[in-house]
Length: 406
Image 1 (cartoon, one colour):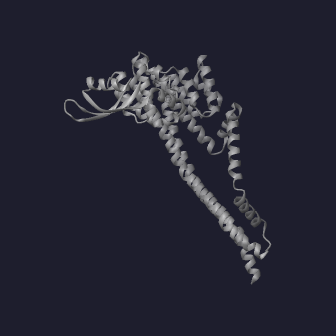
Image 2 (cartoon, helix red, strand yellow):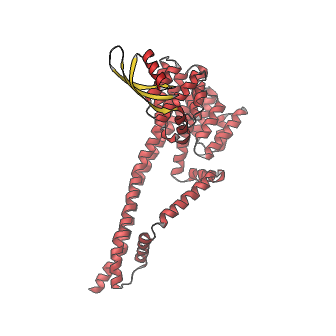
Image 3 (cartoon, helix red, strand yellow):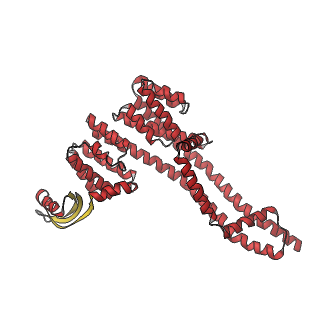
């Protein structure tokens, strides 16, 4: 099977027509367009084959952006809620999406659906595009006959996750620009201003204070051995990456991250927001709580929190309370455990989790905004202090020499 783009005209009206079609060959595609859609094809060419799509799906999965999948899922929900057959839904989605990898993946999924497989079983073969959360929610929706509702929830969830990522990235943009400007200013002073004044100091053979000598040594290092900095940075990067690749190293890092002042509570709130939102979405879609906890554990980035959820899953399997187990870990805020236990008692666990997710999402946003407002003056002070320190270290001895000459 392959996807073809075609141009032609309507046999009845003569209007120009173009689009995409999936078929075994160009000849079959032309015949089907002529018989079914009354389109006479003037030009047709293969856009991408299923073999290429599968190769891209495994090797270049990052080309499918999460937001593209979210938009596709929203369109899928609309088509499904309009009671359009699944095969036709997938055909329409294949023609609409822009990503070739996603387009080919949907085409391959539709091919298997046409053979009698469920959408969840077909999508499961493409984990680079459809993760475990997606597949299990869709499977629950197909089993309960509420696929459209589940797809709506899934689209909401993915859009919220992407919006949260976007907010964090936007919030961090200003500090990043300030840091870059600071590094650029210091680099300019050390590699342009200091060397010129150093020549004057050498010609005058004047004694220099220790801080001026230190500034000159740093300047000489940057001029002649600057390449050692990226080498050291790369070495540290790979060493840290290797350390975090081990289970013990990752656990130590994640535990330390939760205990860092200011940032630790923020990381905890972000993890709580993601945990409650994911678990609530899964439960509301009909996924059993054991399976939901397993999926949620796998998408939590902090291994310490993931271990708590793993222990909670085992406890729930043994008939114990989720809230009590989480409370004993002493990792989650009391409000979260209280809301979970209340939800278990009243039979409204997914609603309570949803309320917690909304509350913590708003709190994370407030904390980030407050942190940025705190970082801004600190960065300005650091920039002014570092630049002023370098200038003072070379200007002070210069003034001293001028006074001696007078």
